[in-house]
Length: 173
Image 1 (cartoon, rainbow, N blue to C red):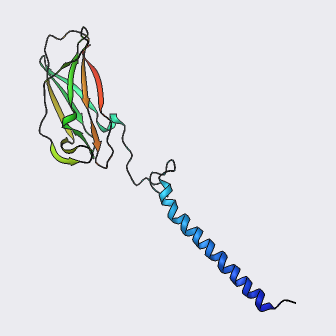
Image 2 (image 1 turned 90 degrees about the horizontal axis):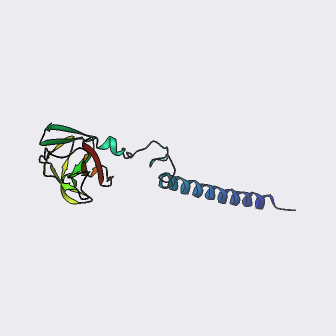
Image 3 (image 1 turned 90 degrees about the vertical axis):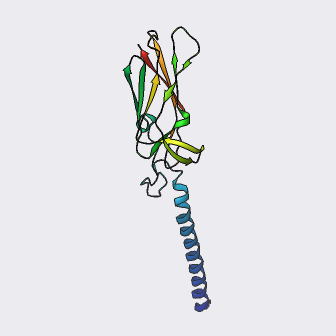
């Protein structure tokens, strides 16, 4: 015959061990959940999936631009930069691709003064926020079929840097 006090002591020991294991398991899951939430699709850095950190805008929404013909010698390219985004001054470049030439012809251009800042990717730079217009000097005798080549790059303030962009638009269709 077994002593009842031994059975109660064994039950208490087992209950205590199970409680400790359950507590450790709950704590480890509770600590690991926020760390792994970043890896789960749609969770956006939150265990609850609320999206605490911004997602990058598509390039066309972050840095939309339009081209204006001011006169037969001047073209303007204007960017409407999304809030919390900026463009790098040193990444602007413009050229003409003439239909009968293999190499593009670089264009002279003017930009207004930007804002001095220290960038995590390029160090001390000049940046543009809001609205910026580049003024390009163009030869009025460019032939039909000439393309305007536009290079630029920008970032989001929260740390996402877009790759350099190179686009072309018909200058004289």
